[in-house]
Length: 326
Image 1 (cartoon, rainbow, N blue to C red):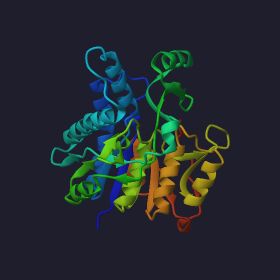
Image 2 (cartoon, rainbow, N blue to C red):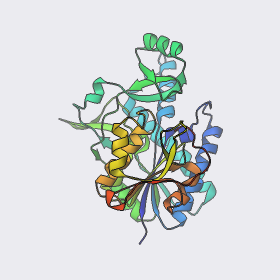
Image 3 (cartoon, rainbow, N blue to C red):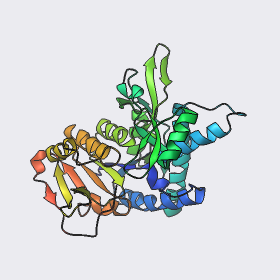
């Protein structure tokens, strides 16, 4: 029986740091991701592909602000929906160029959040492009933004990021996946919606893609959750002479290192948190790896596997090329 694999791409996988984000650049980046995804699907896995939208939704917000005098700007829930269409088309185009026979389906996905989530009062999700501190502070004053440093790479705009509690289109995603289609869903963490007197309504926020992907994996009873990032493996004591790249981490060890501050909130932290949540909910394993190592990682020959404690102990990987920052 084939396994169901949720593959979560970061928004930076489609719009890399330092790029202007032209369509040609984004398509070239998407093609790199598509090769690994197609390889997994051809190997018999049922892939559901999710993606972040930090750079994309930030750029779209800037475009909206620039045209505000002529066209009214839209709230963030609408911008997230727009980026789902943008990135869904982008990924479908890249996948079809590699394998025209592979059916893809992009599902505009809403994700429920709680109206009283404390995240609405404490914006913490970085979006958009990077600025130096002086520019970021000027823009914060001019535009009323919340800002903050992001993993040592610069300063970015911060928006609320509530916790996902349910996937509205879950049944449709499952049906399409079971039919054999490669499904693209929960883009940008999903369109955030809350329950109100008149039903579901959008709210001004951007949900963390890794957390939403873990929730999707849990609700679909997926076998594996793959979190794709800029490093081949999770490292302990990263950037020091004691750095150890891990091929396996038990969920207890992963959470202990997270609590001790080993994994920064702006980079590896949400991935470890999401991986642990999925495994504790009964998932077989979560895998953290690099975009060009997906097939090898699923086969158990690469990446870091976050596993139940019963499959311990944690294991340091054999020496390999140096890990770069997440």
